[in-house]
Image 1 (spheres, rainbow, N blue to C red):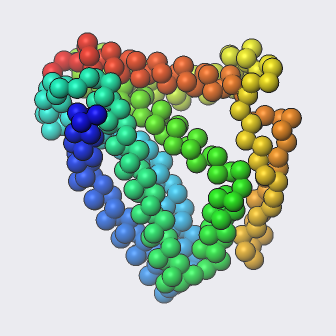
Image 2 (image 1 turned 60 degrees about the horizontal axis):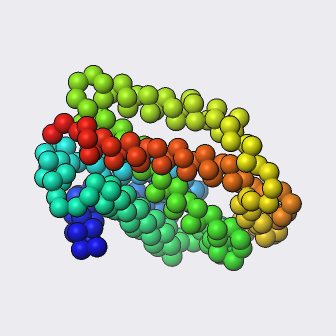
Amino acid sequence: MTSFMTLLKRDLRLQVPMMMIYSAVLVLIAGGFTLLAMEVNAGAFGFLLFIFIAQFLFLGIALPINAIWKEWRMKTVAHWLMLPASVHKKIWSKTLSVLIWTIYIAGLVFILWALTGLIGETVIHTGTYDLLRFVLNSDLIYIIPALLIYLILGTFPYFLGVIMVKGEGGWKGPIFAGLIIFFFVVIYPLLTLYNPLNIFEVGPIYMDFNFTQGEFSFSDSDFSFTTTGDSSGPITYVSNLLFDFLLYASFYVLSWWYLARKVEI
């Protein structure tokens, strides 16, 4: 446990420069759009909210890539691989560091959004607060741990891509990384659509959120959000979960194998 905590503190420190710059950019964006909303049009808060939400798409790609790419960029990969800990611990340490920094950015975004609401509260702010309260008080709250699990699993393909590009050497690394991108852009959506493991969609074993029935409206706006509960219609069958588990487990095993056997340092 001591070796893992040492690895985790090291991986968190490696991300500090990027996260400090990223945090400063978010603060500047929040300040700029707040001034724009106060001086020109309060609708600018809507664009700010969109940026706050959309930036998580960029963060979900940049953070895991930077977590492992930086070992090669700083020329510390040999030192990292020779640290007295297993490769499994090294992978999970970087994975947990990505999760911690993502939660930090989520908290920062929430604080910045709340501060803009104190400066110039609008129907958009009130609506987001009501929506958050609605989610926390309904069965939709189960989506939050599911998102955290998928965030953890989603780091492995990025890890493997970087390891292949930087550790394989020659032309093979970029080709292998390109195949990973092709898989997620083309093959994975097709597999999800046709669900090759649908033979498991039988019997009583499935995952059912059974959402609370309710209706939510954005204050005085016309937008409405409704959830309904129906225990006879499961949302996610065990086959979907099994397919994703096998998929991401294979990426994890390949990441471990490359780091333990194939990386050229």
